[in-house]
Amino acid sequence: MRNPSELAPWFSAEELLAWVQEAGDKAGYQKRLAIWLTHAGPFHAGEVARYLGVSKQAVWLWVGQYNKLGPDGLERSGRGGRRWGFLSPEEERDLLAGFLERASRGEVVTALHLHRDICRRVGKEVSLAYVYKLLHRNEWRKLAPRLHHPKANADAREAFKKTSRRS
Figure 1 (spheres, rainbow, N blue to C red):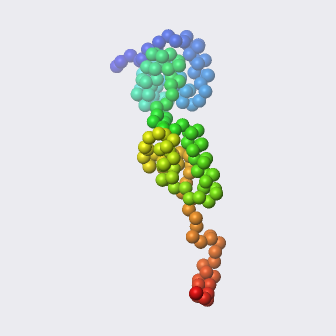
Figure 2: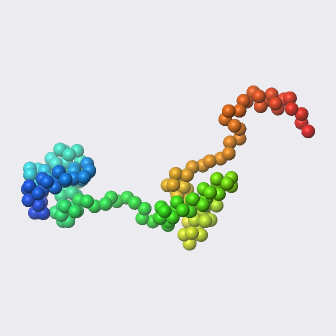
Figure 3: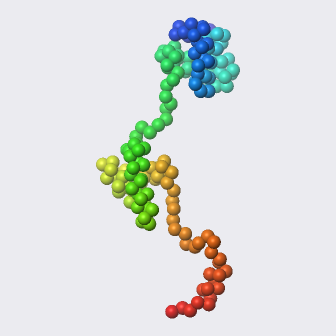
């Protein structure tokens, strides 16, 4: 069997323990604890993974990041995010604020109206799917006028239809 991973000497044993205890959140604590267990055990990555309830590959990744970049290597940002957004979230909110004002005046605002203005603002043609995703991101939903009042009496309406005069 292979020897357990060796850690780069970024901290002494006491400093490493203090560093683990200073973790700000659960994910950070878990990563730091994996480093500490690899150093203090020394345990193999499979054992550390089993103790922490993570995959062996995650432990290898954390140890590699720690060895290569030091303690700051574990503080990397995630892989998600908006990489190809045409407008920033603030610009999107500003654009939709104008349409919200128009809609509050009673005008009907459709995705096609938005599409024209977004294309003009961005300076190039965007898909209609982009418009719908923009609306979803900003928590807009489809609102339409009701055909009948929700508290209306259906029997009274039918009686009125039967007894009213047609012109």
